[in-house]
Amino acid sequence: MARSPSPQRASAARPRAPRNTPQGAAVRRVFAEADGPLSVQDARERAERLCPGIGIATVYRTLRRLLAEKAVAAVDIPGAGVLYEAAAGLHHHYFVCHACGRAFVLRNCPGHLQAMVPDGFELQRHDIVHHGLCAGCRTATA
Ligand SMILES: [Zn+2]
Ligand SMILES: [Zn+2]
Image 1 (spheres, rainbow, N blue to C red):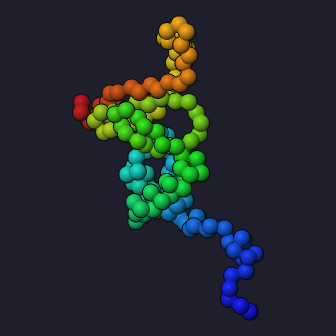
Image 2 (image 1 turned 180 degrees about the horizontal axis):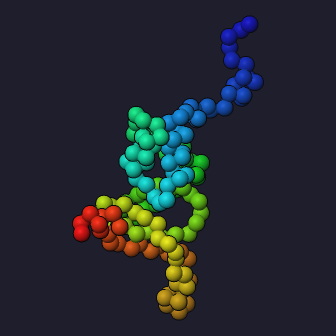
């Protein structure tokens, strides 16, 4: 009868944030379906299409959770800043458009980069960023 929380209760009630809200689900879906890295603002705009009225705070909150779960990774791309993308684990590189500032995933990695490294050095990782105009900005300025 007592209202004091029983120990069983407390352990059953995990730290339960509002995990499966439609807003949170929309943000998850945006990152899962994106074809490249997104800024928080991009993510909000896409989530808005799935869930009209979604606020930037919800996007940040869900993003923090996705980062903690390692479902999404932060990538710091020269020329584009820190963006977020699904941590699918695929090795890929980026093309940054200097007109719209967006980053796009390149088709492939040239590979065989150890050949560029001086003798005796060990290449451990590499970043490749291409800079230019994306197709949309190219036609817009043509
Ligand atoms: Zn562009
Ligand atoms: Zn590569």
